[in-house]
Length: 555
Image (cartoon, rainbow, N blue to C red; front, side):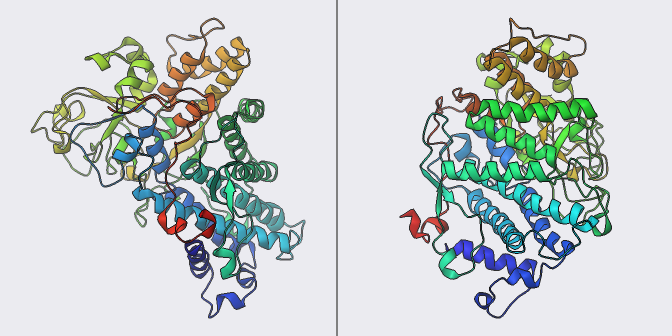
């Protein structure tokens, strides 16, 4: 594959140094990765691609999940400079603007990971000849190798979900999906003839990598020497994150016993140590500084700013402006509304998606919006999630300026001039304190999600009261005036799914919940869409032409 060759060569040139004849060097990274601090260069780039590039990060996975899931509504008269009609209307046979970058950045991560893991293998687990009792070996090198497994497993999981046929618990999963390599390519012949893995083979590697990461990563990092910087851990994998993600992989695959084992492990750890616990619903969305981790966030997106107050890099959750209430220049979580264009809340003029009416009806937050009754229910008004991370906007009125009383209650930006009905917005992005709200962090995996997934697993296994207990943990946090809504007689798939919508909409996991439980994926508000039933075989995007035209194994 020519593009994989270019990735490998370009990555080596960028991360290490140029060389006159790449293929005359058997192992070029050995001349550059000679210490843990230099090995960190490749790992840092891998995380950068995972979190902060347009295809793999910056809210792109959350965006695609939201608008394909049936839980989003496309606002009348709006459009943006990213792919939106294809995913919203599920045109899976069409090319996406994001596909090429997703592919390139994903395989850059995999190439870097393979180079590092080859180095570890060929160096018998200690290629830098470190004292195996030293802090540098115990706390740095061993962790770095486990992190390379983690980022490779994460990346293959995302790529196979994006480009591969969905995993079918009742099928053989032998359809070809994406290139699968667990070692780097060191010749032109290698990179021009990459093996195409089956869906099963790719998922096997995902599981192996995440299992290795869980077994070898620490629960918390021990920082020393060159990495002793507050916030160093933000966005990186650890033992608990690896277990949580592994549980999510198993859940999607329909391996329910294995999924519950991982969720039990993470939840038990959280409850016994207090390192993770539920707080106010807005808490995971209002931090800037990397060192300040909200207790509910198991794994976070990090804006890349250790102090949360740097404008040297333009790294923020780009897609949040397209599916959320606030623009990137909003400052502070509160709805303080002032006329200064650089202060207070700033409504996103780029937004074109809100929470769908189909979803709001099932969440119990609008009376009957599909039939024109947009009344907000008392259930919504009493729920802290609705109060803190969602926001109602009334129809467009011309001439409202920032600082006017109606600015935070009525549509006012010209892009929304055709919006004639009330809508509920996601308000989970750009919530950090002034003056750098654009660099806000947000959770990639959080504890409430795992409670709800375990609730479904327990219910599915006939443990109805235990399922209700997990549901009430999540419900009670957001409804302290009306606790313990669920019991063994009223917990079921529909109730769990509706609670999942209230809790997790817009955070990137709704389609995984639907596929993992084997429920039909609803059409939602999009006219022309139809319900998609298992095994969801057409639910994946075309592999970029640059790949299929050059790799002979596709033919």
